[in-house]
Length: 310
Image 1 (cartoon, rainbow, N blue to C red):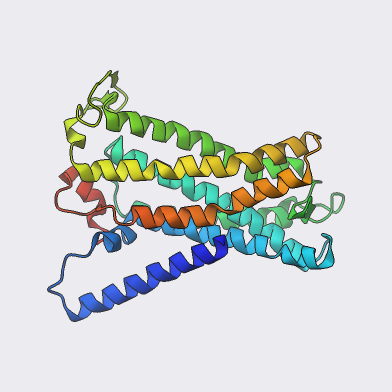
Image 2 (cartoon, rainbow, N blue to C red):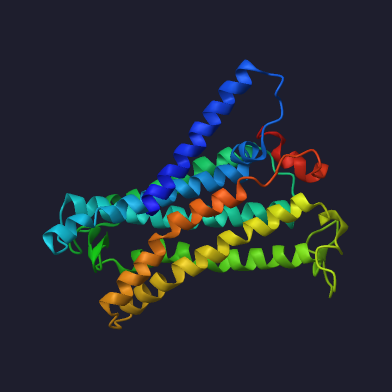
């Protein structure tokens, strides 16, 4: 389901963008694009598309488990190595782009930074470059003859071999943990800021003031625009869903790594929840893509973040 959802959403995005680009080329008078198209072409929309690509990689890795079902067992092979590499790439990139979305939303809503558009392309290239570097690092620089292949049988599928426990944590679990904790912190600050409970000085964001308010969303007049409220509220869904989806499988994997006996049914159920992230993120994209990020009503300090994307 995740594979179909991620693939279908990405195809819909590219076909819609291509159709609208062709329409604009033939009719330049229609200079204002719809909100969904402007969102797709915005930095935030671009990061979410990267997240969907990460879900696609993750789902493709899990699809290879069909081989183990057919043979009724997991064994070392070229398919095992491919699944291990894809699982590592998918899990790391999913965590990475979830963190990027959280950081960008925090910069936009809380810090009100005027981020140059070149930062978007630097982040895209750097992010995927980091994922590729991590995946290639294991078999090319860390793998040893004594420990055996870096990609190997790990429970009910193939992943980083059990002979490399430190690498299992530093090259995947650490990314998931940092993303989960950081996202909760950043979006808690965003939520309180949108409600008017946390305000910061216009001279320095480090100078914070705390307030109790009986009329949420109204105290901070700079956030009175409903479009800004929609951006903040809709983005709150991403970290909450990520933490909820990753927590069960994280508990199972960490318990197993410490020697605890994790029932087969719990592992499969946790993995099913984790792999449903493609469906969840596709649904979240459908909900957030119509947030008007480039409408003229946006204050200039926020609208400037999006001008380069249209």
